[in-house]
Image (cartoon, rainbow, N blue to C red; front, side):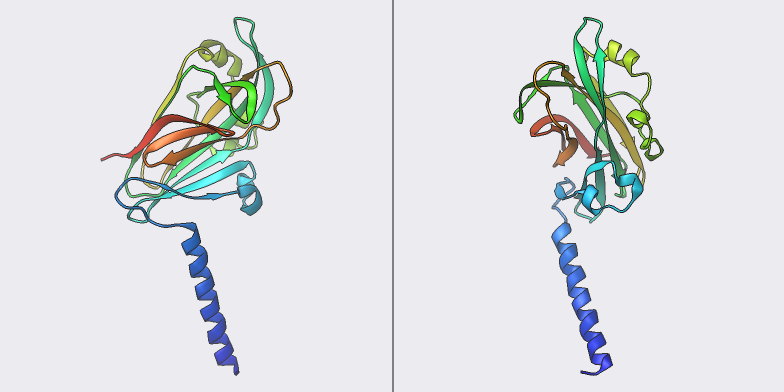
Length: 222
C-alpha cells in the first residue's frame, strides 16, 4: 500500500469515527419543544479550569439544530445557619448557568415552594431550597460560596417563603443563578449532596439527589 492510499484510508477512518461520535451525542427533536440530549460529566471530560466545579452539563437541541446548554455546579458551603425561630440548619450553595445558542430569546421561570422535600436516597432527611436574586458569573466561581454574600440577612427574610426567578436570555447570551439548599441538623451524616436543573420538553425540574421537583418552564419569546 503506497503512501497516498494509506493517507486516504486514514482520512476515511477519521471521518467515520468523528461522524459516529457526533451522532451518539446529539439529535434534533420535532417541533419547537426542547428535549434532553446528553449529559457530560465534566469532572472527567473538561479541560477548562472554569469547569472543574461543574457537576453536569446538558445540551438541549431544537428542530433547527440550535442548542440550549445548562451547566450545574458542585456544592460549596456546608455551613451552619440558625433561623429566627432557633431552628439549626446546614446549607450549601449551588449555581446553574443557562447558555442560549438558539436564534431566539428564551424566557425561563422557576418557582420553588416553601415546603421541605424528603429525599428517597436520604431517608429521614428533609431539604428546603431558596433562590437568591443575585446573578452568578463565571468570574465568581473561585470565590467563597461562589461569590454569594450577605446570606444570613437574606436567609432570615426568606427561609419560610417560596422562591421564584424569571429571566429572559437573549440569543447567543447566557445567565447564571444560585440555589441554596438547607437541611435541619440532627441525625447521621448525610454524605455529599448533588443537585441539578434539567429540562423535559418545556418543563424545568430541580433534582436533589434522586428527588425531582417540577419547578418551572422555559419557552421561546417573540
